[in-house]
Each structure stands twice: as C-alpha cells, then as structure tokens.
Image (cartoon, rainbow, N blue to C red; front, side):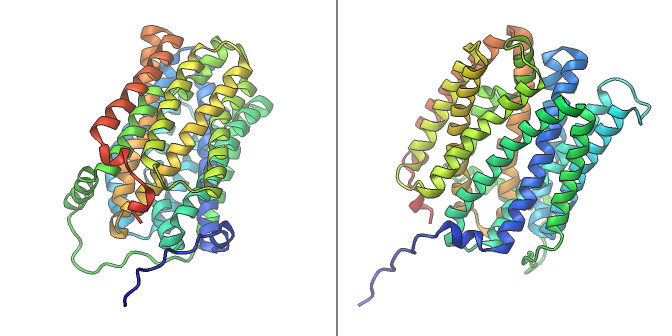
Length: 417
C-alpha cells in the first residue's frame, strides 16, 4: 500500500543560519541596504535644507524611479542569464558611485552648482537598485533548499528590517554629528563592504540549456506569468498601491521640520521606527510561521497600515508619532514576509530574475512614485491632509483587492508548497 508522503520536519533557524552562502547573501543585502538608507536620509535632509520645499523631496523619488522602471525589466533578464554574483557586485558599485558623487558635491570637489547634481547621483541609485533585489532573490534560491525557504524568508526579513532600522538611525546620527559629508563617506564604505563580502561567494550560476530567448520575448514570458497568477498579482498590487498612496515616510523631513519641530536626530529616529516594528513582526513570524489564512492576514495588515498612516498625519506629538510608525512598520513587516514567501514558492527557478524584477517595479518603484505623489499632494493640499487622504485611499485599495482577488483572500501558504 502506498502511504501519502509525510510532511517535512519543521526547519529550525539554526539549520538555516548554518548555511555559509546564506550568511554571505544576507551580509551583502544588509551592506547595500545600510549604504542606501544612509544616503536616503542624508540627501533628503540636505535637499530640504537647501530648498525648504516638500516638492523637492518628491523629486528625489522621481529622479530614482524613472531610471529604475526603465531598467528593471532588462535587469531581470540579465539576472536569469548572467552570473548573479557579478551583477550584485556591479549594483553595489553603483551605490558606491552615488555616495561618492554626493560626497564630492558636498565638499565642493565638483564645479556644478545647485541641487541637480544630487538628483543625477540619485538616478544612479535607481539603476543599481534594479539589480539588488533580483540578485538577492536568485542567490537566496541557490543557497537554501526549497523546504528552507519559509524559515529563511522570515530570518532574512528580520535582518532586512534590522538594516532598515539601523540605516535611517545611523544616517540621522551621522548628519547630526558630522554633517552630510560624514554620512556620504560612511555610505561609500558600506557599499564597498557589500562588494567585498559577495566576491568569494560560491554558488551555482544559471546554465544555458538551449538557444537564448530574445530579450523582449523573455521579458514578456515573465509578465504573462505574473499577470496570469491571481495570487501573485494580487499580493503585488496590494502592496504597490498601499505604499504608493499611503506611505508617509518620504515626507518625514518636511513633517519633522514643520509639524514636529525637531532636528536630524529626530528624523533618524522616525525613519527607523517603521523598520523597528517590521523587525518585531519578522522575529515573531520566524518563530511562528504563518500558514493558515495567510491571504486574509495580509489584507488585514495592509488595512492596518492605512489606519496608521491616518493616525500619523493627525499626530502632533513626537513620541506618539514614533509609536504610530512602529505599528505602521509592524503591519508592513507582516505584509512583506507573506508577500516574499508567496513569491519564492510560486516562482519557477528559471524565471526568478524576471519575476523579481517585475515585483521590484510593483513594490520598489511604488516607494519612489509614492514620494513624488506625496510631494505633489502636499504642495496642493498641504502636508497633513495629503498624508490623511493617502491612508483613506489605502483602505479602499484593500477592499477592492479583497473583492477582485478571492484566491489571495482564501490563501494558505501550504497551498503553494
């Protein structure tokens, strides 16, 4: 008699952390995140001090997202066909170049005047970031076995969000202590660290098994896969529109200056608070992986994210705002872990680069487009009404997704294993 296969034993965090390739991959990601976050805090503070205009903060996002969206589909194709390790090192070199140019601008080593050289440097980050997440996801799938993905994703989320906590806090401290010059110099060193740790990584690279598909045909295959998968498309769209319309972090330099009346240290604290909440979510999920009702929990988390956005916009107390942002980040952390797990389990290995790039267009670009949207709305409606309106629209997005994506709403993670 044939017995049904027994479910795999629960994977421990220790087992996953024993994988040296996993540790190197995480370290690469953390170094890149810290470099990017330090630059993000420093350049936002720097430009707002020069202009005093919230729209100028939105233009930072626009300067980053335009090259990102134009490059991301091709980045996915390259990740699926070229050595991932070398592409990751090249992306980190782009982060290093961005920080180095900003450092040169701050020190007066470049003859250019005004803020446009800073926007130009940020645009390099947009290209570099196209490769960071697809390379990471492709390496993640190579350094861990499939049955380790769920546990590995939870652990990686903790490390990722720890970087998101430390990066903004570090950026704020560095700006307050030594100015933007010190912040940019540290960002250069962190990008160099990410390159160094990735260099000796040993991992199986993609092997061509036949004629390589044309670039646009290959990209089209990835798009068709995503748009034909209701669960993946629903999760991506839910996160994209909530961050695009309900994110408040991009306006923090203006909010901290005009509403809460604090300095760069306060900016660093508030920028770190969402990631602090996300770390707490990641730690809890790492010990208690979510399986049943994962889709419903995802939608509840995003709805709570919208409510926190509304509460933050109405707050006038610094520490109350900080507490709201911690809960805001906790909700976002739950969403990120669930979405990452869905993507890892639902994507064939030979399409990871393309699917990850499409996901990046949905998710990563929404942060920068959201920054531009927030800047425009703050200019039209003033700062507080713009933030509150974004939270209200987020709640509408959750309701629409719940109706239009019933398979996502009823999803259990075991359905994808």
